[in-house]
Image (cartoon, rainbow, N blue to C red; front, top):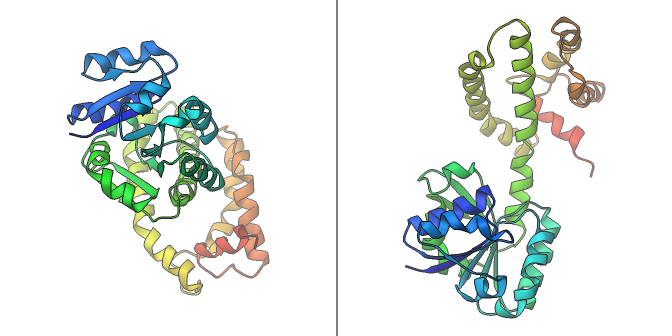
Length: 287
């Protein structure tokens, strides 16, 4: 089995290292707080006392730190050891930062892959867990079998090093509005003395419905034809006053929805009232 090094042992980094070790890969771990390595050492991982030793231990180095800046700062002392190795970054950041990181890695003779784990730490290693990567295709092909220990749904998006960060930013934008919607719903039902857990099955069904309509919305966006809507913007516009009254009735703070309401009102003013809800993209685009 291949050797792999994991840098950063927060909840996600520890899950990555555990998945590699559990799959039988010779796993070396490093973290600024050395005590975090103890549970992984108990599972067979080796603990490197310094980042230079950690990088030197494996041809594949997976960094799971907070940002590209944090990753680069952690790796700087070991930059000379990166030559001939593949660096994989699994952290947050903008596409431009991923491009900068790729250039830095190339400058030190390393192959580079940027990636994202599209699930929670507990799901790492699962057969359906999605991870996508971008960057050096030869490096991906060389290490794909090892990387699949982290999730069965492992995808290479393309050779451009910032594609994973681009998709991570694009897909990640869905999360907070969806969670806020659920939290508002939970505030509504708990204000009536009901438990938030009673909302869960209906919320899941609703999210499944939303997932089912995304292909049609994407087709409308790709063709630029919004004229045959399943749900027109004017339907959402007609309910705005009732949605605003909700804050007084519950009571809950619905002010977080104000930018969305403004988007809908601007779309109607621009003549998109009878168009599909997907036409709101024309209000979001700025160029």
